[in-house]
Amino acid sequence: MAYSSTEVSPVESSPKEERRNWVELPRDVTASILSRLGAIEILTSGQMVCKAWLEICKDPLMWRTIDMYNLGDPDLGLDLEKMCRHAVDRSCGELVDINLEYFATDELLQYITDRSNQIKLLRLACCYHVSDEGLIEAIGKLPLLEELDLTLCSFSVEPFKALGRSCSHLKSLKLNCQAYRISIEDLDDEVEFNDEVIAIGENLSELRHLQLIGNGMTNMGLEAILDGCPNLESLDLRRCLNIDLRGNLGKRCAEQIKHLRLPGDSIKDYRFVADPDDGLLDEDNPFCFAGADFLLGEYLELEDGNDDAYDYDYAYDDCGYLSGIDSLDYDDFTALNDDDF
Amino acid sequence: MSSSSTTTTTTRLLMLKASDGVTFEVEEAVATKLGAINNMVEEEGSEDLICLPNVNGKFLGMVLEWCKKHANNNTNSDKGNDEVNKWWDKEFVMDLDQNTLYHLLMAADYLSGTELVDLLTEKVASMIRGKKVEEIRETFKIKSDFLPGQEEEIRKKNSWAFE
Image (cartoon, rainbow over all chains, first blue to last red; front, top):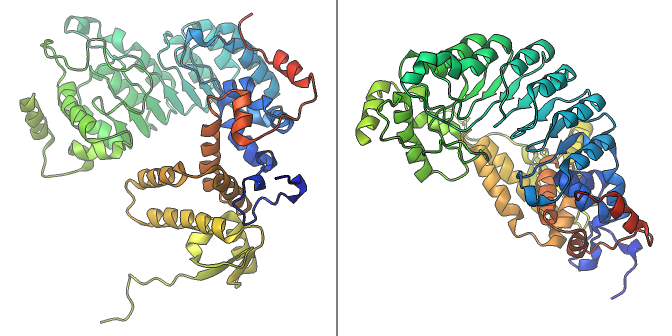
């Protein structure tokens, strides 16, 4: 059946197929749809569908966020760096939020920060090719930075000092890594395992949110954070296997931090490697931090009972002391769990 | 015993009239989840009947169903509301056919139902993800309107494979 496009009246009562025309959606709506695709799909497919979509994809405002979401797959066959430079060019300095996971280099960071001084959010997960110097140089050019994600990167403590100097607006830091256990002998050099978090405590006192999944710190480091970052609202300690939260430090965490995630909490909403190579269970290791033991019990329970719609507020209830249940003493609860294992 | 009860709260009811004459009686707290209605209520004050000539009854009904669900969930207990809303949203968009999705999106946008627009645009985006240009055109019945040669040129400019 032939129809004329002038007859199209989008919100009229008719289930007929020909009454809809996706190209005629309001511009803002189409822009919202396309921006959800992420930079890679916009550049490889979305923008090439028709003239109207191409036009929208040329708008600098479409590139305020450049999400180069990828899985670090070398077989992807796309020159992500080239795509990213192109996306940055299109943003015309409007860039606010950029995700460079897996592929950032010093040169790319320089290219981006030379052209964008509005960046508030920089994500560098798994960027093994960025050096201390490259990151520090970039940090110096991002005075508005509010959130930095350094998941699975390996930097020294120097960038934290640079953040303290240059980024007074920094509110959120992610410094996740793969968990590991340290042995009794390691405790001779305890500072070594805590140097990162000590540097955070010393330089980033304005932090509100800190995610430290898998961090090797001991109680020494945790104390440095609680002392150095008095404004912390959320602290994510999942898979921090070398801290012991049974004593006063656990109570202090619960009192000081509004949203606390514990070493044994579920990591289902986290998409990188967090569990140690030898698994989470550590039956052979005689030196087992009690905190990890106790929280492990909770972890296993949660894994059974909860699906991906996991709310960590409930975890507080499960472990008693955080939810303020008086009848259940924290140490009793720990003993109970120790028996189970 | 006092006649006043904490369970009965006086809620103003609004009458919404769709383009095809269908009317809906809705609590003000529900309808004002839609920015457009909220503006009208604030501007016109006492008007209880609101005419919406750009939305028909079927889609207005669906938009209001969504508003009602979210308004109810938000007044219930505070814990887990986000999860309930998320679950319900998932169900809401799961089986939408393309025609309904399109008109619902137009209606939600017209009524400034920001959260609902977000939900529906995400649904559309999920239907685009992973598809090649031709497949997207096929899915949404979009004809390429590039001039001959123009598309080839754009593809050349946007070739991202390693050289």
